[in-house]
Image (cartoon, rainbow, N blue to C red):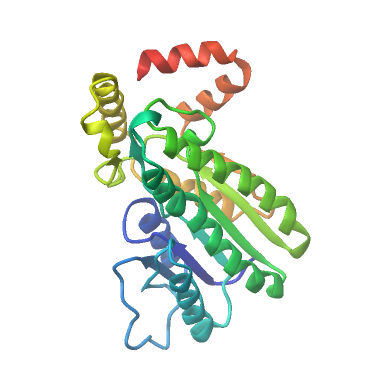
Length: 272
């Protein structure tokens, strides 16, 4: 439908790795990225059904350009882009420094936008393509002590909705996936604002919120549930604007739309 060359940004673990494996198993030529990867010395002639890991740091534009140029040199096209890179930052708004806020936005939002900006001219020239952004349930339900993570995902939601309308005339499809609590190494990679470790004003409430999130993530489904959502988008002629992953979070999304804001706030305060 789109072609067989896929770029999966953030493919070294978790949801990105699982989706890259799905593409590989279905005969795609997959280029997965991570910051620690190195460019292969030699690519095999038969690349269908393989994953080639290459270096890409979404916060460095030169790194993005180099990775995309490498794919174009070898394949001449990029048909599918899956954006998975990101991390969480815990702490109250008061505790998060400007530098920490800029850092998470650089990875979770501006990095994603930069990759998209460099891939779009290729897809426009091809008159087809698929872009899938991994967002989060936190992109439509803001969680206490996860303000910057939620803010980046709210930004991803808005950008993806706009992008979808802008590129439709070029035959490019755009969707996003909204996972909830998924059992991956995302839990262990969560960062904490430096001031949150020493500010007693929020310490106990922050601790409770993080413990609740960790428990829900460790007891959540594995990344295969996200792969199923990705497969639904990939194999649809008219992919939906978003796929909320899991019955629990589909219900949460529905309740967010129909319940008064004060009721949603009350429930979140009780949970976190």
